[in-house]
Length: 282
Image (cartoon, rainbow, N blue to C red; front, side, top):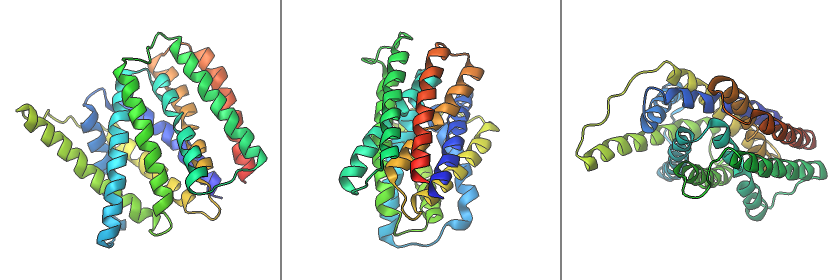
C-alpha cells in the first residue's frame, strides 16, 4: 500500500512544480513560497497538536532543511527551463538511496535494484540532453541553486525517516509548515532591513491556494507512505522523483521548451525503471 501512496504523491508533486513556476509570474521566490505555505498552514490547522519541546525542536530543524531546499529550488526554476530544473532535481534520489543503505540498513530486491539502476541511467542521459541546450553547468547560478536544493532536500528526506516513527504524520506536516512560514517571513523582513528598503508588495494570485492544496495532499500521502509497514525510504524517494514526468509534460506544453523529443525518450526509460520499483515493492 505504501508504494501506491508514494505514486499518488509523486503525480501531485509534478503539478506542484508547475504551479510554482506559474506563481513566479506575479511575485518573487520568497513571496510565492510564503503564500503557498500560509495556505497550507490554514488547511492543516486542525492537526496542530501541542507536542513536546523536543518534538518542536526536531520539526524546526526539518523546517530549516525544507526552507533551504524550497527557496534554492524555486530560484533554480526561475533561472532555468522547467524541464532542465526538474531533470537536475531528479538526481536527488541518488544521494537518498546511498545514505538509506548506509544509515538505515535498507535492502532492495532484484527488481528494485534493476529499477534503481535504470532510473540512475535515465538521470544521467537527461543531464546530457540538458547540456545540449547550451546550459553551462559551471558558473550558472540556476544550476548552483538546484544543487543546493538537491543536497538539502536529501538531508530532509533522511531526517523524515529518522523522525517518522515517533510522531503522527499530520502533526509533522502541520507544524513543519508553521515553522517554514515563520522562517520565510523572517527572510523577507530581514532581507529588506539589511537592504534598507521596504519589503516588495505582495500580489495575490489564485494559483497560490490551488498549489497549496496540491502540495498539502502530496505531502500527506508522502508521510503516510513513509510510516507504512515495510516502507523503504530509498524506493519512496525514487518513486516521488517520477514527478519529473508530469513536470516535463506540462512544462513542454505550457512553456514551449526545447529538445522535447530527446528528453521524452529518456523519460520513457525513467518511467520503466519506476514501474520495476513499484512491481518489486508491491
